[in-house]
Length: 485
Image 1 (cartoon, helix red, strand yellow):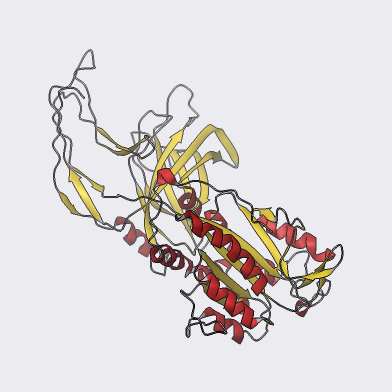
Image 2 (cartoon, helix red, strand yellow; image 1 turned 180 degrees about the horizontal axis):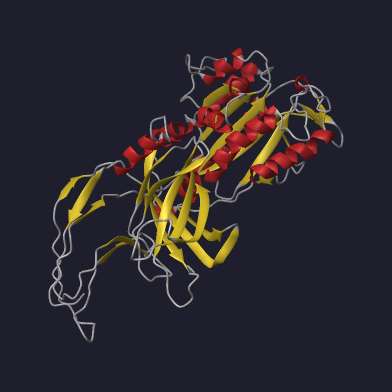
């Protein structure tokens, strides 16, 4: 902008615009974990009128009680097929909840701003967790179930740093170049932020000042967001109890019984918790193990076998892959005992201990144990948990069935400090236990919320205790290492 004089103004406190909308919709009823800003851009938007370009606007909707509610919308960008919006969506992020979002692109003409008359150009659905975990999510726009040409939408998430200040800016320019032949230019100002990876990101776009070479644009407010979003990669280990106390899986009374139309309690708990956690795993590959069963070919008892029977590569593709491996291995096993869970905790702890050598926030391990609750190696389990409390890992235990879970409650440590048989206390509380029967008639989201509620603080407590800061976005890398047997 040759010859321009740019004058910044002052700083003030930012008001929470989104909070009132969320409260009105009754979407959330628990304290917000953090706030994130969502930036939106589209590419290749097609209009049904091939002779003109659309005037696209993106509508953000959020699902509550099975219905979609509009939360906010971007500005309308005239005659544009590749819009980059300056409007930010500020939303509350809850790690332990599935927050379903829908982004709809509409062609809104200059004659009206209503959606009834507007043309629907395409939509995209996802969860907020998917966007936050990937930081940048790009998907094709769908229209009536089909892809809307080659059009796509990209959403970028940034966590607000906790600083709720904003900057109020006012710019003006003098003696701009005249780009119009018959009249003076119609200038507008765009401000871009330079990222650590040398890319630039649109922060704000002013209004257009018509026919003016020395414009004074209206003042505007921009939030102060100095976040380095270095979320550690988190690996999910799934351990499934196969002991005989669960009953014969061919019997409908068994906790492992595979009903043709109804998932058993193990599957319900696995899917409810796993679908939340998988949004935060970079490669969506999950090592899955069982314990307390005789396994082929020799049918010796094992307490840490891969349920895909591939000890060199126990990983399954996504939670659905874990479900399929579980259903496939059941007919090949002989449920036995005892119910020893210390070996599986030690197995994950061995992998977690290797991460301590990196001296950085690279991977955090979450071990999900599904069991009927009759533990026979309590002393060894307490010892394993005390050792694991020094490592980057958390243990989530879901008790299925109607057994006595008093021993499990002791492992949780909510009512006191868990100690090893030698009297050594845990360094930090890493175990969360819930009985599935308390959520038997509740939604899967309620179970996931209960078992995952403590995980974010456990992650932060570990790295704070080690004096390890989050990695900057330019330093974040994806790891695809396989868990060693």
